[in-house]
Image (cartoon, rainbow, N blue to C red; front, side, top):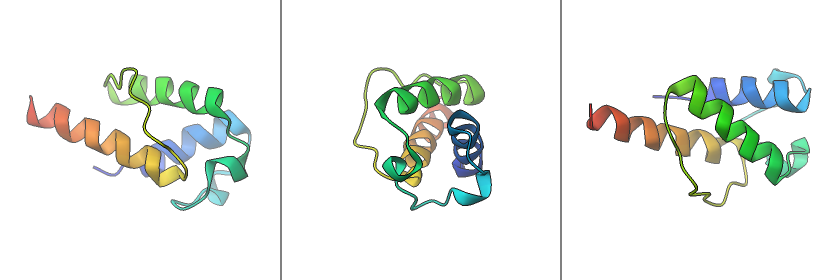
Amino acid sequence: MNSFPTVAKLLAKSLDVAEETIQPQTELEALGADSLTVIELIFDLEEAFGIEVGDERPKLVVVQDIADQIDTYLAGKAANA
C-alpha cells in the first residue's frame, strides 16, 4: 500500500499549500507543520484509512515518514483480517 498520495493531499489541505509541492522527502518543518498539525493529520488519516494509530508517535521528519507509518499500520491490519 502506498499512502503517500493521501498523506500529501490531507497535508496540503491542512497547511493550505499546493499538493504538487509536497514530495516524499519534503521536511514537515519546511512546510510549516508543527506537532499539532501532525497530530491532526494522523487523526484525519486514521479516519480515511479506517485504522487506529494510537498514542505511539515515532519521530516524523519528512512526509514519507508519515506515509511509512500509515503503510505499516495498514499492513498489520491486512495481516490480521
